[in-house]
Length: 241
Ligand code: HEM
Image (spheres, rainbow, N blue to C red):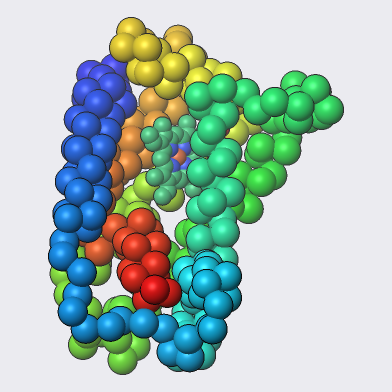
């Protein structure tokens, strides 16, 4: 298992982060240097003031009212997924450093209990969202519009989330953020190591597989349609001009 962990959770992470950072840098450079379209791509209806257009841009990016009108069920699942993903993203911050203030207020055990509850809710909501998307592309009318890339991305996301949930629900009572943090900080300081707790028992398989899917997901991200996470800002900005 230790070799599996070194491949997926040390070298794989370095490779994935390098590809992700260089790939996204290249994407942003491409967007920044593409000549402006001669055709106006403005909003409709267009708010009269710059402030109005700015807030419409934020609303279009974060609430996506047009999607809600076209496919309400999809909008509900997608919105829940994105809020949960944001929560999980913030929660993963504990792998870098413990949150300020909260642990003092809740105490060590209280903080872990809070993380367990919020992580479980986020993990389940994300899983439900991805299962909905897989179902929508597999059974509904969208099947004929789906290409292999759609399934590949959903499969990778599914793998990341199921294995994250596996750690959360199966090992959540025995292994807490401080153990994972020792490993993750060792990566950040380029002195990789695994605490004994991650090497004994089976949690290493779970972490290794969470990281395997995460590595593949990060490597693929800059080349996939998921760059919309960042691209939606630039396209909505162009529309707001
Ligand atoms: C470098 C990247 C990542 C690392 C180091 C990482 C590490 C971890 C760890 C250690 C846990 C277990 C937390 C615990 O039980 O205390 C976890 C849980 C989880 N991870 Fe990740 N993960 C990464 C990326 C991702 C990504 C990209 C996603 C989703 C798109 C994701 C989704 C989840 C979910 C849903 C859980 C369970 C809920 C939770 O504890 O927040 N992870 N991750």
